[in-house]
Length: 56
Image 1 (cartoon, rainbow, N blue to C red):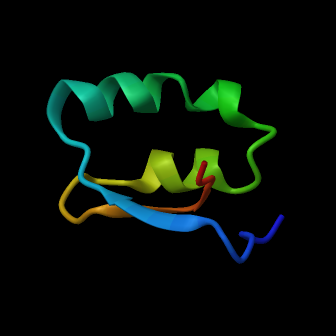
Image 2: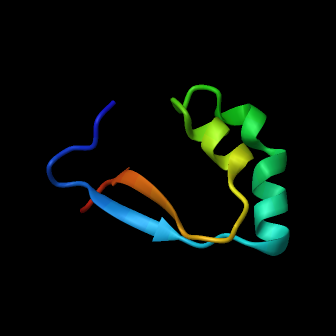
Image 3: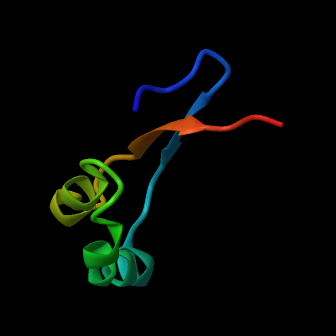
């Protein structure tokens, strides 16, 4: 699914214990196309961008 015209891209730096915990749970993200793979490969050195954050 492509981001909509009103969606916002958010860049987040995730490191340390938060990154470890997130990577432990990537198996449950199989329905989020490509997100599981991106998080598994993420090293926490640069911010990771997420498209499609809905605005109110």
